[in-house]
Amino acid sequence: MTAAAATIATAAAAKATGEPLALYVHWPFCVTKCPYCDFNSHVRATIDDDRWRAALLTDLAFEAEKLPGHRLASIFFGGGTPSLMPPATVAAIIDAATTHWQPLPDIEISLEANPSSVERTRFAGFAAAGINRLSLGLQALDDADLRVLGRPHDLAQGLAALETAQNTFDRVSFDLIYDRPGMTTTSWEAELARAIGFGTSHLSLYQLTLEPGTRFTSLHAKGKLTLPPPETSADLFDLTREMTEKAGLFAYEVSNHARLGAESRHNLAYWTYGDYAGIGPGAHGRREGVATERLKKPETWLAAVSANGHGMASSVALTPDERATEALVMGLRLAAGIDTAHFAARTGRSIDTILRPDRVARLVDQGLLAHDARCLRLTPAGQPFVDAVLREIAA
Image (cartoon, rainbow, N blue to C red; front, side):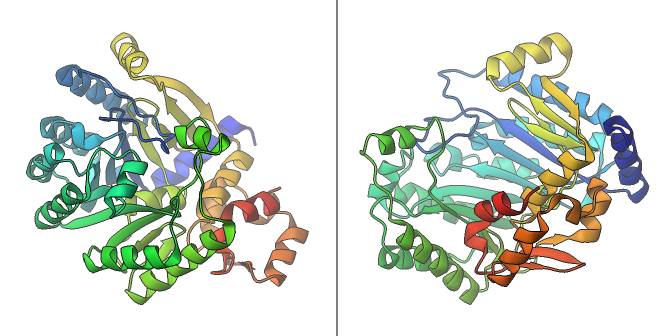
């Protein structure tokens, strides 16, 4: 079967089952660029809000034409810092999206926010616009570490924003970065205990990684930034799992912990290889077997939307093998692993056709991987090594 024929078959199957759709909206602007961040984020002195609202709506309409008849399961405003968006822009996008597609009754609409005092004043406006889940970028519960991370807020602002969020939105999650310079298991245990005590139903807890092109990577290469040694990193990961599970916040994905039923449904669409549309600068999408990508630079994307009615950089039909590899990379991050029947239905490939059986068998024997006819998943012992396992087993 050709890539084009496989794409048509995937699209037909999606429409036949009425598969829901997720929508990602990228807002590329930040107040400052954090030294660890490799996301498509930019600092600009001024932003023409009216022009940006019109352009996002145009890009959205173009994407909706390509995906008729779907039900909308989730919308996620990411960035960048989408809490810098005017609430009126958020409202306009939600209204348009739920007009283009029929929303599910329990649609999840999330927005990432930074906890500055300016952005906190917009929370009520975001809730009125339709946001029902806020993801707050606290990143640390220590002023000195917030300065090291280059965050534009202090702890007092962060805690005030968290309190406002919990009083405003039905669901609240917040992010913390651990494995920071100088961190020990003792310091992280105290910080995580405090974080759990705030009572949110979802926590995103990320180990600090050095991403290419970031200032942290440059500082590390020059010997000016030292991270905890590997054995401490492993202990921090284990401690995180132990404390969150004891608190009823289960690690449903490598870095995401939630009470049962409070998982991010939007992110689960990615990890289970569902269809999602992506609009805004640099946004990616998976549109019924087609990989889409928008132009990254804000000004370039904006000019393209004005000229062409969309901000597309590329649209490529993926082969079944390419889809299968992507589904493997995403799905193995989940604690539940990969349902092999769902995998075959989504990609057109049996999962065994893209695995190295000898290496899978070895990792199973080592207790890092579990594999049978129904499921492929990492064991708890294997979850800290997801990237290394993928490098081993993917054919």
